Length: 316
Ligand code: FES
Ligand SMILES: [Fe+2]
View (tube, rainbow, N blue to C red):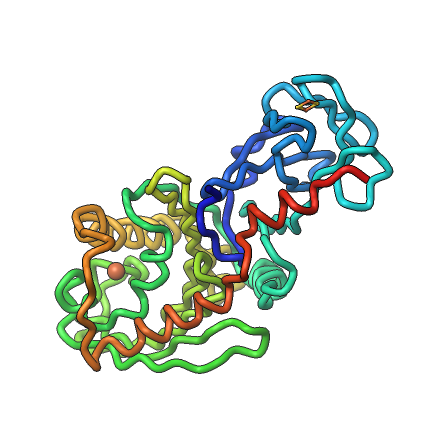
């Protein structure tokens, strides 16, 4: 049974982790083959259409194809290959050291443009990785849960968040945070004056990728299911140049990453000890969570991405 997967973007790693020409990756139960050639990346379904071998474990590249390690057939990389057997390609995005894969072209939702613009105007710094024993979608859903900011992150005031549609199919969640109560998370390493308001905007690109701005800083979060009930959270940051045009200080970047990590650690205690299939009794105050869940449903299709990959993986 292929695991249910939303068909949007997933962060599959950081470029610094990809050292080989052929690397196995996974998004839930979908097994991927990542091909790196001269800093260009291609992601393909890793399951050999002949008899199911994993092409990234022992496969060798050969002029637009990979030689399967099991019976030695040439498997064409991409549905337009002339090979008898071929495996479908998924769009990849490598920007500023971050690496993403898109499972359906229908749900690009502007991530490419957003990150390229951010990379051109900010210093984008690949950050850290954490594993959580929790469903991947809980990570992005967290931003839609105003009440938890008070109890988990100890904000004194509940942020007044509101939703609006983005121009490219993404969802915008915006509001105001009060820095006096947010000193343990996301501030810029400097003590804020009590009562300082910070504008917050989260651009939710897919159920698993979110780009959030708080004040001048941006945090890029990806949460990718591992196929065993856990997920991998990857967090990176982007900061503008300082006033004299020089790069942001290492100290400021480190503080931003440290505070983001601290915030996730606060959430992790809740996430990892929650019963994920317990019945929910949502209140009217949980409206935003329902809106996020509705947004996620747009990324569902009759068939899962894994199914689609299998079906298009046919003999020519
Ligand atoms: S399983 Fe790949 S060639 Fe047979
Ligand atoms: Fe949180």
